[in-house]
Amino acid sequence: MAKLACEGAWQSNHASLLYVGVCRVYEMYVHNNHGEFALSVRLLAQALDQSGAVVGQRIEWVPGGITGFSRAYFEVPHLPPADTYRVSVWEYTWLQSDGDKR
Image (cartoon, rainbow, N blue to C red; front, side, top):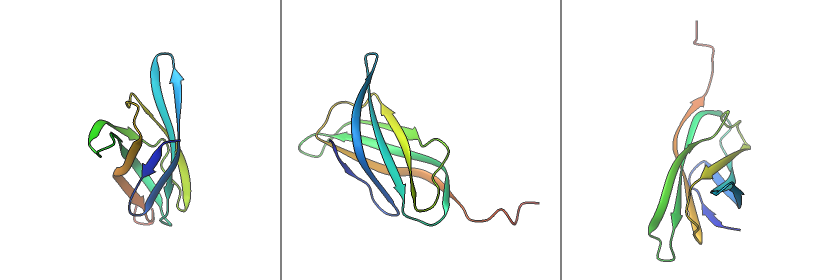
């Protein structure tokens, strides 16, 4: 099990490694600790060596967004093996109300 770090209104855990053909794919969950639906969520996943230096990184979409106070599954292909992974929310939009749409 890889160690993960995520900050702010977000939390990530439970990384596991899959092999799809010759490709390494890390699968994880990201938790939305905020009460509103998050649209267009993109995550920056970074592989870190023992000194904390970044040895690989990718930006990936979270499919379907994340409902408030829930979690969503995502995968990050092509990250190198590492002892620690850092996951940061790169971009998102809160869906607060659709009442203004006409």
